[in-house]
Image (tube, rainbow, N blue to C red; front, side):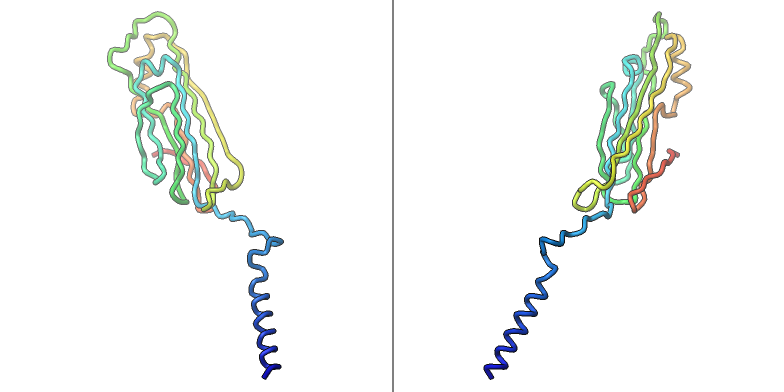
Amino acid sequence: MKKNLMTLAAVLCCTALFTSCGKNNPDQPEAPDTTPVSAVMTYAFTVTDDLFSAFNLTVEYYDATGEVKTETMTSKEWTKTVKTTKLPATLGARVKMQLKDGFDSSKEGVFSAKHAYGYEYYVVNKSNEKLGNTVSNSSSGGVDMKYEKVTAYAERYQDKPIMKFLLNFAADGNATSGSWE
């Protein structure tokens, strides 16, 4: 009987030892979670004093849930960071403009209609840890013109964005360029 108890005790000790091995072993760190679950993008737009003072500028952008939201630019610079709730997802933004009532096209001098946009993005895992590199892009454009030309410029961009970008994120976190409809 004593021999059977000693054998049972030895088996139980070995079982406990083997089942605890490999779990929480400091010599074997857990593999990092590399599964992307969300994308984080920062949008940025900047316009010249002339554009800001002469035009009502609105930004349409994709929010965290994939809905298009609209905000009015209340300063020459507009930025927003959005984190998607899941992948796949679409993120992007565009700026539209409408000439303000009472614009004085008889002014002398040069009207500067210049603008720039930029964005940066990265993907994160479920622990909100950044995976891979941050990708960024920027562009600028515009034109200088006489004040008398501003009304024609405004008509040309009626219902068209002066700046835009759109990215489609796949379930694996890879992004490809898209276009606004």
